[in-house]
Image 1 (cartoon, one colour):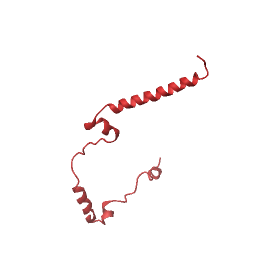
Image 2 (cartoon, rainbow, N blue to C red):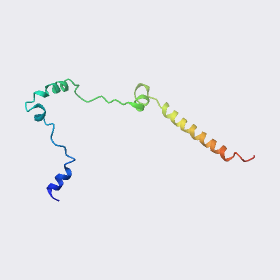
Image 3 (cartoon, rainbow, N blue to C red):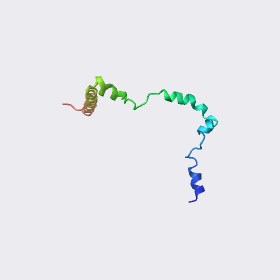
Image 4 (tube, rainbow, N blue to C red):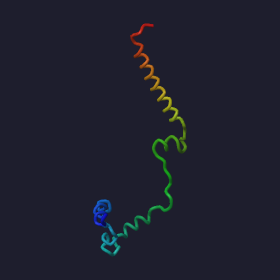
Length: 97
C-alpha cells in the first residue's frame, strides 16, 4: 500500500493539532496562568475510593448487611411460586376431582 493511501484512511481518526499551547496562548504562555493556578489548588495524592449505588448503600460501610440479598431471593421465590400456582390452576380448571 502507498503511504498516501494510508494517510488518507487514517486522516479521519487522527485529529489535527488545533490546541497546541502556542496556538492557544499566542506563543507566550501567559494565558495558561489561571489554568495553572486552578490545578495547583487541587488536592494531591491518590483519590479516596468511593463506592456508590446499591453496593455502597447495602454491602459496604456501617450499614453492611446481607438482608437485601435475602429479600431478593425471597421475592424471586415468591414470584416464581405465584406463577407456578396460577399455571397449576389454569391447567386444572375444567377437571372435576
